[in-house]
Image 1 (spheres, rainbow, N blue to C red):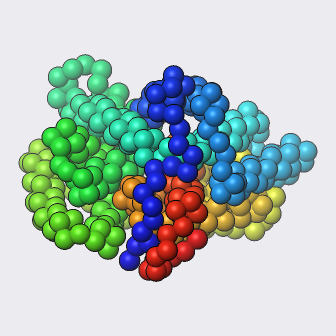
Image 2 (image 1 turned 60 degrees about the vertical axis):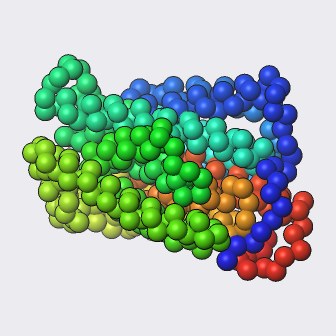
Length: 442
């Protein structure tokens, strides 16, 4: 089911022992580790990402032509946002919305400018991550993976302590890491925490199957899984179940040796037993049991009932998309209604107009296509790409229900898929494997 290629780890190997190379890996690690803490704005991640970009410059990280569509489509999206912003500046907010902002009684451009700047900045981080992983891929993947897992462990510990401190108060002040009786760690929304923890979980599970089970990784997986459950995010729970099931299936198809197949079967059984055991242990705690019962429903009242329900806001957003081809400007819909659209695609059409919305939709579809093609090619990073592609796919699907377009790990995964696909393509071009095509060909 896979195409086997020459096991090159990069199409332009980097010097492993140079000072600038070490600096690049240090900055990559520190930047990703900081990604769980966004209590303050700008977050430390923003400043560290600038230093990471400087490290890329020193290390002469090159820009692959394969990644060019990623950059161009992101810039087109942001150009649509600029057009929308200029439209509301030139015509006045009253003519766009028909009423003053419920937030301020008028329209202020500061938050719209910040929104647009954040989109542009996060888009650049996606391009940067793609360039980093397109070269010296195996080593840089190892650094990225270790950093993200460390960030997830710290976030899960803080979220777990904060959640239980809310009820038992054993260490005063830790309740800041909980919100609305849910673990939130360093994020502002429990749903973001839950989705943030899915990639490291899938990476650890993938490592258990394709490599070996190491004690520190097993402990990390357990800690992250507890924090993941205590975030009480229905979307994250569903995404994780689907991602894990698909991961098992794709690894079974792409790992041809019998040993890996046996490990997958054993892991599915042992993992299911362990997950149920942890779940039952947590359910034995009354406050956790009550929250699970409350969050276990498929739909909440705010999803389907009322004028401000998620469903109604999406319907209103769709109507406004057709009313404003140039968009309502960044954050314009929120100023007009005091709510967000709870849909990343509708939100982008509203914020960035049809131009930006179509560019973003095209980018997402293209990313899913190039990632799907690359994950069938046998490379040293093939299992990691599979374990990265699936959480990104689930984030895209979650984007139909929530606004993920400013989540930092969305852009990290976006860049990772492009970078790994670029490395795979260049490995094929260099190795030129004389093998029969079984999966797909570039």
